[in-house]
Image 1 (cartoon, rainbow, N blue to C red):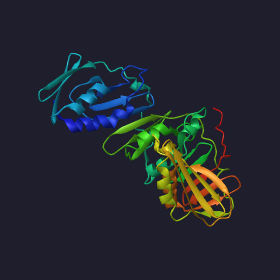
Image 2: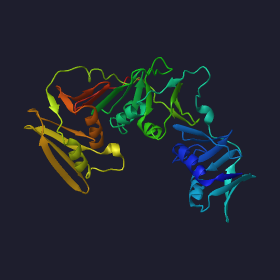
Image 3: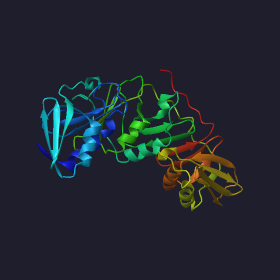
Image 4: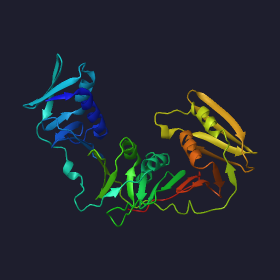
Length: 349
């Protein structure tokens, strides 16, 4: 079969996040060609896209993907022949070892059936999920806090320093397990999900499935347990307002020069409010930057926050309320709280 090289690369790029970096189960590091689809599975995420290349089997992902990237021509011929996938492009030829038998444990995944409820994803779902990523805990012994949690019409995350809660009116998501109604998706999986734009969600036992209009699907393993209650953190509390300086976005951009890290969510600047001024300081291996601006507040407080996230919050609300222990940004269907003393405890499983 002759295929367009760029289309091959594009479809393999789509499923690449499902390839395991460390192989525990055979074929976790492979592209699996099965029933007109290409599938990858790494025990946490399974990605499947419609693509019929004229054969069935499993081929190691890395050499096939790199080979296609290095071919000079535009068309590639693929032929499966006795345990070998033969690929050619112009005068270039190669043979890749292929497993004719598919042993990837796809049967472990609780797939949706015709009786599984279809949950349309509302407008704003991905923006909400992206905002919640900044409040996800990185590792530790509390796996629930490493998740973005969805329950009914609410998406939230909390890392015991920051809490983000976004409400999406009209959405209704409930886990199939009545004992743990929250749907807890690991933050690392949410990062992968944001690369796609699925329109529909299905919930099965221990799994969430996202499907787009082109038939591409991403299934992810859920973290068990009921997400801890955060209602006490975001309860309505009166307190003095702190109005953000009009040039705060520009200050954050300049300070962010020195906070750049491998993962954007890991960046942080220090913000101090005192004497009617707000001071932002960013520091890193390359040096540091500090700038202050006037703010209409005589209160004193300090906190650390991701500069890109705070810039996004400014578009939602440029005023924060200084409560007893928590600094809270509020807007319609949005709450973000910051506090060094903020603590929530997961329910025992």
